[in-house]
Structures are given as C-alpha cells and as structure tokens.
Image 1 (tube, rainbow, N blue to C red):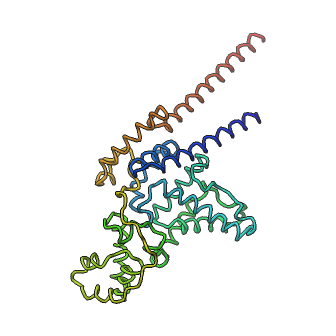
Image 2 (cartoon, one colour; image 1 turned 180 degrees about the horizontal axis):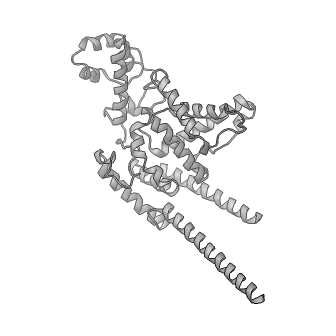
Image 3 (cartoon, rainbow, N blue to C red; image 1 turned 45 degrees about the vertical axis):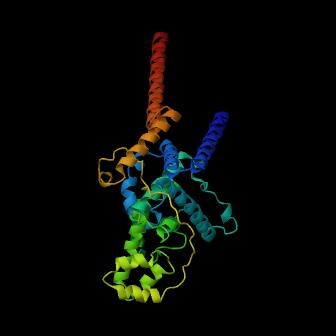
Amino acid sequence: MKGKRHKRSRTRVKEREKRAAEHVQAQQEPTAARRRVQELVLVREVIDPAFLAEEPSLSQSQWVQYGYMSALERTELFCRTYLEIYRRHYARYRDCITADEQFPVDPELFRNEPSEINSLWHARQHADAIGMRYDMFLEAVMGWATNTKGRKHFPRPNQLYGAKQVELALDQWKRQKDIIPRLFAEDWDDRFFQQNTNFDPPRRQALKMELGMLKRSSSPVSVLASLMGPKDALSERDARNMFRDRPELVDEAVRGLWAPWKVRTGTTFEPYRPPCLGLRHDVAAAPCSQCTFSLLCEKTRAATDKLLHAKTGSSNPLADKKRELARIRQKRKRDKDQATLVEDSLMLEAG
C-alpha cells in the first residue's frame, strides 16, 4: 500500500509539473487571442464548470483594478497574495524567523493540486463578488480565522470563504472602500492611463469612479489636477471634452499640474477582451445576452472545445472524468455485491 501511495504521489507531482509547463508555453503565444484559448484549455481541465459559469457576473462586480485581467490571471494574483499574507500572519503570530520558509501553496498556481486550485479560484470569486481588493479580503478572512479562539492552524485555501469570514470582509469593505483604495495607482495596468487612447470598459469604469469623487469633493480642481498630472490618467483634451460646460475647472487644473508619479512608455496595446471571454457555455442568458463580445466569446469557446478534444478526447474532460469515476465505483460495488452473494451461497451449501 505504501508503494502505491508513493507512486500516486509521484504521478500527481508529474501532472502538476506538466500543467505548469503548459501554462508557461501558453503565455508565450504571440497574440492575446491564442493565449486566451490555450489558457482556457488548462482552466477547463481543472476548474469546476459551475465556478466558470459565475465569471460573467463577477466580471461586472470585481474591483476595478482587475478589469484587464482574465479569471485565471486574477486567481494567480490571489494565490500569490494569499501566500504573502499567510507568511505575514505566521510572522506576526507564530515565528518571524521562519515565516518566509512557509509554503501553504506554491506561488505558481498550476503547481498546486487541482483541489487547492479550485479552492483558491472559489475564494477569489467571493472577493470579486464583493468587489474587494484581494489583499484586503485575505487580511480580513485570515484575521478572523487567526483570532478565532481555539484555532491552531492558519486557514488553508478551502477555509478562506466561510460564511462568517465573507460577512466580515463585506462589512469591512463597506466601511473602507471609499477611503482606502487609491484609483490609478502606480502598479495598475498601463491600459488604464492616458497613453491608451481607447476608453475600454475597465478604464471607463475607473474614470467614472474618479469623476464621481470629483463631484462630491469640496476641491474638484485638485481632484482633476491629480487625475491629469500625478495619476496621468486623463489628457487635457479628454478633460476638456468631458467638462465642456466648465472650461474654467480644466484651466485651473492645468495650472496646478504636477509631473506623473510614474512615466509610462507604452503606446500600443492589444485589443481589450472581457475577463470572462470563452468561459461560459450559454451566452444567451444574462448578463452575456447584452454583451457586445458574445460572438467572439462563442468563437473562443468553440476553438477551446476543439483543442480540448484534440488533447483529451473530450470537450468536457472534467464531466467525463466524473462519469468514469462513477462507473468505476458502480462496477466495484457490483463486484463486491456479487462476491458477497457467492460467499453467502457457499456458506449455505456448506451448512
């Protein structure tokens, strides 16, 4: 039995390494469209289809900073952030010297077990449903678990989305979302800033949030000057188009401009694609039915189906695997029942 366990363990390690290598290869595809399809093949081999079906709704509620990231990219970020905050809590409550040696998960998502990947994916979805930044969500749920009386271990990925934890995170976000997260921070994707001439949905949403703050501010000139200068998110031309009825506001903001916090050199960007593109089987239902990318989504899904079938012999390998495991369990049960009947018959004959 011990030999079989070691063999299964070695097999699982090889499977994880193979998935991680395939992920690296997918990231090297020359276009965003091809990268997305290769990415979806890996995702659909591992992630519960029920989780994938939730992504279109989550793409509308996620924290605005993640708007240019695919569902997989967001889960990778969540995984790395979980490891960082796990170590932070370990250092604070257990041992600061060995904190960096703790590896509750591998920072490379696909090097983890499928069950852990699914748990991280599902935990990330809870944060996206709230619209919360991942570091804040994880600090909240890890903090709740760490401070729970009698708890001896820090939460594993499947322990990050208990009802009480999520409720606590939601309450904290309601109190802090308007005062803590900074829009257009230096680590945001370059496509959020004025070098990108397209007003993609994520960029448009971030600007809408910032302009909402401007309307509520007692110093709108300062807010606009920050948006045009240090944040580098809005050009003077676009600002004048937005405030045609208030040219004096733009004039004052221009006079008070500072240099950008970060100099961004990118001038060409790949076309925007929704984070959920290709993840949902049925694009006829809401919210997909109103999406302008629905046709591209269907084509992406079809391309993924084709590659999945070529690779695994199925366009739905997880479902087929579940059916095969159920068939094996049923066969084992029938064999066991048959053996019991034979044994009972022999005992009767002997009696």
